[in-house]
Length: 196
Image 1 (cartoon, rainbow, N blue to C red):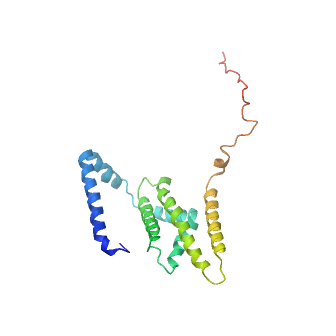
Image 2 (image 1 turned 30 degrees about the vertical axis):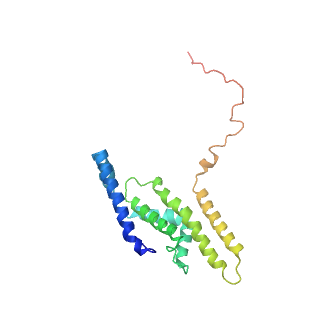
Image 3 (image 1 turned 30 degrees about the horizontal axis):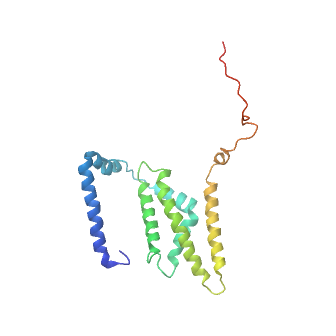
């Protein structure tokens, strides 16, 4: 749509035929249950809320995923537009994940599973955007390519520290069992006999 205007009509018609034909075929094969699961059930779960989108953006995108989100935002300041060219596909995926995440906040089924798409896409878009920004900055006089690479590594390290800080301490030590608490190997346990 952005780079190849001549192919937009053919692409739109092909997608329309595939989606429309697939919907009609599945509706005839599966009957009313398909229409219920495709339309009625999702629409009945919609609940308008202003708080959940703010929580999604503020707590998740700018909080836990803040480093990756900031890198994606900084790529818009580049001389070349981030949604054009071969790398533009990733930015379009990032925008689609953002819109999908915001729409999922309006459902009663919104939960941690709704963040999977945003996390996966930002895990791709964030480092790509960091690489583009640091390459541009490293091209300035007095800069070095090694300095740009170290900035990317430092930013990703900060993001992983944020991820690790979100885990509760009980998860860190849930698998650790002390030697005193562990039963000795090969030592039979005394049978438990009922009293009375």
